[in-house]
Image (tube, rainbow, N blue to C red; front, side, top):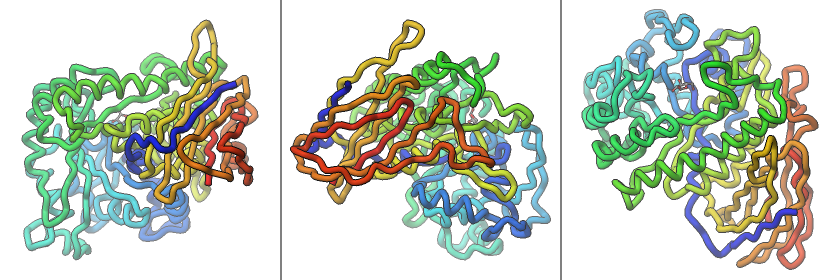
Length: 492
Ligand code: AHR
């Protein structure tokens, strides 16, 4: 039996809705076949963008979408992707399978997609194979309202009014594929390139620096020291990989309890990473002006057998749903510093929320977690105390239940729980202090087996079930959190 006391009168900060962001890279079938099918496709689309995925993502209230990479961003030259389709050059997508990139999805298409989704664009610029002038002109092309060579080009290409581009990343993984830079060098690169990411009119750009890979604390320290005052955000990339990145990450669908446990443990590690990076940031930025932006996170398994290994296509089980819930609970806990997160990636790549196969589309267990947690967007994080039993496996233990609680602007209290054990259900006694609520409803996402997933043949195998109106007496209630489940309840 676990116990949780929610202190509804102690608010710990706002959960920025951008924590529920997504990421779309020119990788495998994320853009082509995922978002984009082209105007002549039989698959229903608006100007080439799939209608079904837009509708599904609108339901999630995706607040922000990162593009065009990832590694691809550091090879991308934006001029290739504007103007007449027939004249756009075909390039090789060297990072991801060596496929031909025809540049049909470019700046206009991405920004139009964001408008359809109601999501804010977060564009990642190229600082390793691209020049300062190129980045400067891209920002001018998209956001300048007056007359200039770039705004005239934009107008000639069919867009009269500038777009708003609130978020701009100055490089991606510059410690690795993005130029193999040292943090001292990157710190200066950020200062130089960032200078030319200009604010035109009232388009104020939030500039995000390339942050560390997982536990590279030295990177955070040096970059904050050199470039901290010039940036608005610092990114962090961390993937949950049960195996070894190079020797075998593990299968997305065929795994035993030990691999399940390792996955949970490695997902929980996000808390330590954020805590330690935040402590370093505090040294240079005690007022927490600079946000930590976890702009790549999620599971990374071996690609599905029979698929192009460079496409990073993986299935998505109830285990992925738990990884999503665990991460959201952690991001909420750190809402003072973590202002955005972007799961990798939206469609058909890594821990996708949507999978497509030609005209078919399915929603993954991860999609359902995003949907269940959207009630926390922009809500006030509430303080709580939890006592939970351990989940033990191979003489190691982790907490069985992780949780989060928030109050929405209408005064509803939303609580989410993750039961990390694939073996045992858990009763939890809940007590609400500082508020009176009399009714509870919600939903539960679980599965029969720990490797259950939604396939094109069985698209609803893992889907949430509703908890109907339940009366609450004296602000106390008991919930059963099934094994391997994510649960969200709303108290009114
Ligand atoms: O998301 C896949 C890749 O992972 C991204 O392109 C890169 O930034 C990271 O290494």
